[in-house]
Length: 182
Figure 1: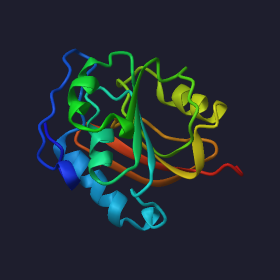
Figure 2: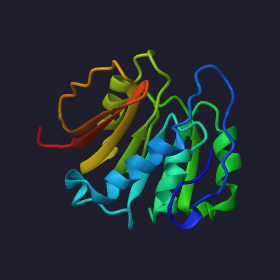
Figure 3: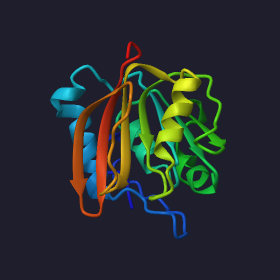
Figure 4: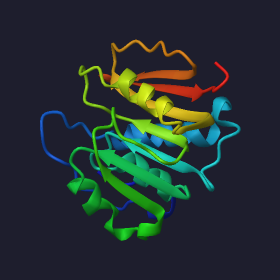
């Protein structure tokens, strides 16, 4: 596994082991970041100065990719932080924070422009994690939320506009936009 674009392109990443671990493939990340740069729904998003949250981060590949594309800061959340600590060691620590926590109950002090959620499949963690983000005001108005789920997962989220849905192999990407007025 490697970073697929930006300043750190081709940097190798180590992956955690375990049955719940499925790092986002290089191909899916490349497709996702192309969408973030070029899709119609991303016209008002810019990596420059963006604050990113990588929930259920595992190896941290999504957040590290965002930093490689020019994001200002990324907060990584997982119950096992050793993989992201190893993978982020080449980046200046002022650009990231790592928090060992349950993503459905984490307390956050910042609001984010871009949120990645790649929870273990079939554990019903997506809705509680989104509710927790709203509860702690961790979403900027217009924030993009990228969720990777099992292909059969159905997204119907109150207060979030569905911008795109992309099945890919056994997975699916759900791209949402937060609207505080809803």
